[in-house]
Length: 546
Length: 36
Image 1 (tube, one colour):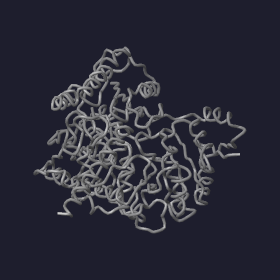
Image 2 (spheres, one colour):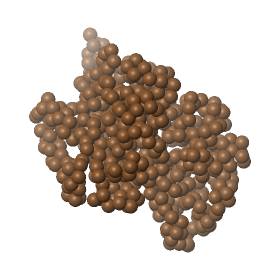
Image 3 (tube, helix red, strand yellow):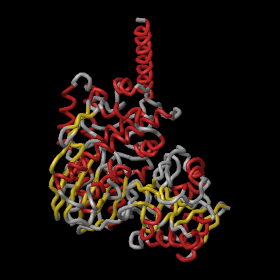
Image 4 (cartoon, one colour):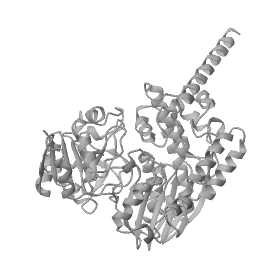
């Protein structure tokens, strides 16, 4: 059975090909178009996945779409009908886009006449979260902005079956509240949420906590959100109205404006209130499912600080590598527990890399090295406070660089964080960097309950000597690495440990300001040349500037 | 009474400030959130 999974037209479009239940290839469209969180139909991703799987479009048996257009249409029409005059133009715009975004029409125009199976948006999240875990019984909690109607679901996974128990519907959405305050703080929704999360520890929640709490009305196991502060039901532009400004008694921040202490307080209050609501949900999940395991899905599962709270009620927590909509393209293709590595994207042969490098002979020195020599050399560079762009094998799927498209540095250098933020990535100074640590040594440095291979749980840092990878509140978004996960990366961290006594490296995604994660050797070289990164490694090529 | 008038003026001022900011935001149109 050959399946093609697709997510598109919201954010983070992606495609995935599975053959006989095995994930062969998956990639996000943004990597090809270089448009962050690209939501367009993932034509480039589909083409690449088919090529990687060595099949043609006609060989596909089933196409699985990550949401149900009919149910979504029902939500939109019902919502617009509440305010027909106010939504008149928006409705027209929606109808137009609905026509051009009909999956059946698009796929038919590509020559596909086979079966298209539509899944509920939150089922797709749940399937990706549960079927990539190794549990045969687990609670599943999915939280995001909005799917068709649902914004939150609680399900139970047992064997190959996922049974939904409870759902919370639009417009009551924790994800949309987070995005709204993200936009209120002058960041782009669906993109800047992690900036708000990074900003939160710089503030104190007290000033705005009660104001944000007053927006909620909690019932026994659900919540509603007072819509008088929001425009979610009648605007696709600004997400809040003047009532929210008056409630907060703080004018919204325009992008680029100075970040004041009040903005930090608001970020802190949002994170606090989000965690309170998330904890309530977790309690409900526990009481309904009685499971010891939980799988978290939906875009909100990128909130590593809140994710940690799951350990209060569950012994084991699984969060997949791309819990947002991109991962749903994989989730819809899975029907049972499947071991899926995050390294599912394009890779490049040595001959191709050599050919690309030969075009930069006048600007670069390059040298192919054996694995051992390369690792020794790079570990030495890292221990001497050099910044290394590390490009290896298949590209990661999801928002996190997990050691194949990473910029690496020493977490022990107190100036490294500022250097990376200001000089290399040219981004806000408050944003933290993550450490990668050998799984077997993680307990020495970080307070984690179990391995965190996908960098999605924030943990207390136990030591003081990792300043560049420790946030202001003494925490880190840690990634644990073992041999099976990523052998070469493991060996590199191990070597760093042997030289310095600390088997930890700082790991941030290989991209510069506002760029998508690096896909190809050419892109890697161009980015290396236009930045102050000291060393570039592409597979086994050690590359230096002349 | 004086305080009340002061409060009211302050409120109107703030209200204008919010309205101005909202107008600016609408013009800049930075927050396109496709929830439809």
